[in-house]
Image 1: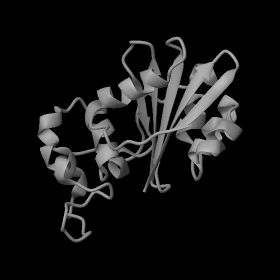
Image 2: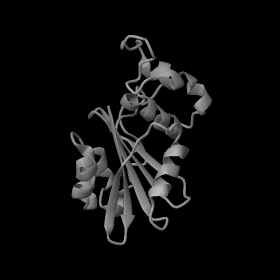
Image 3: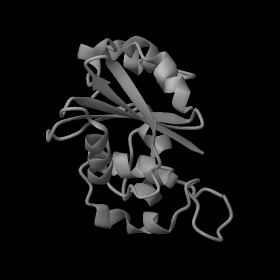
Length: 175
């Protein structure tokens, strides 16, 4: 199961909204969703996690390209939303991963048993996916979450990020 939230920075602090990813198929879709939540083209941070297995942070500012960080690329590549972000970070064409279109949110094909191929990292993402963090680990540095801190997050990472941003209560209202 996924949890996703958008945190939009305002003059008064942060506003959070629960985010449905049902219509998100690309990073561009996610960035557009974040831009809709933005106040005056200010910073929006999308937080995504899958049951403590991996988390992702996408930072969008105005029309700039989104900045992305994944805590564990190999684990993320096993899920449809994580694979979308992993492919973007690795510069893969979305057409290379067309088999993801038939995946459920748990990463299995409709009607298929939940068994993993021997090397799921290669099979789902069109080639090897690095184990461990991937992306811009400095994307929250100016907001109080440095690279070393982001790379060291474990457990309830999204709450720790929200705490550092000063918006724990805001995030908890949408959980």
